Length: 141
Ligand code: UDP
Image 1: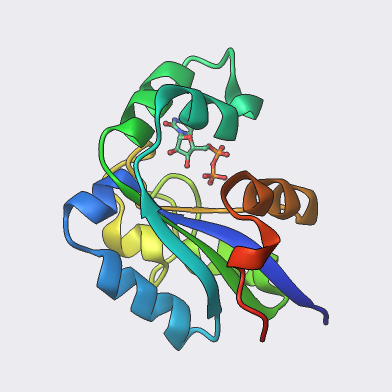
Image 2: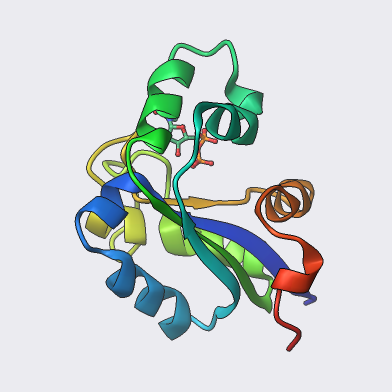
């Protein structure tokens, strides 16, 4: 298995409810190394650009509004097999179907307000990491 990096976001609903520390602990407890991290608030263009693949879908506008509604924490996480293992750790998009013990099952409020984001492929991880970080902001191991 290769050492991989994935892009993680602690989304507005979680940051608003003071869940940042608990969610960061879950990442670390599950073997993910935080190699970059910042808190920011997305503007409309940034939120639309990040979720460009969903443009045209009925949930796009409310998703963009939600992502702008409060600060978020964006992180680069590193681990063997990080991309797939992180998706397993967070659970399915809809918390109602997420497995017990997953972050979305424990913390998410709804299919939209689902507390965390994670890259779904190597291609998305590369694009999403570059969306928020320049290489010099990512700590070498
Ligand atoms: N989303 C939504 N309504 C839907 C599907 C998705 O509001 O019916 C939001 C939700 O916040 C989700 C994000 O759009 O996390 C991106 O959707 P995607 O299908 O890529 O899910 P993810 O990869 O985040 O599990």
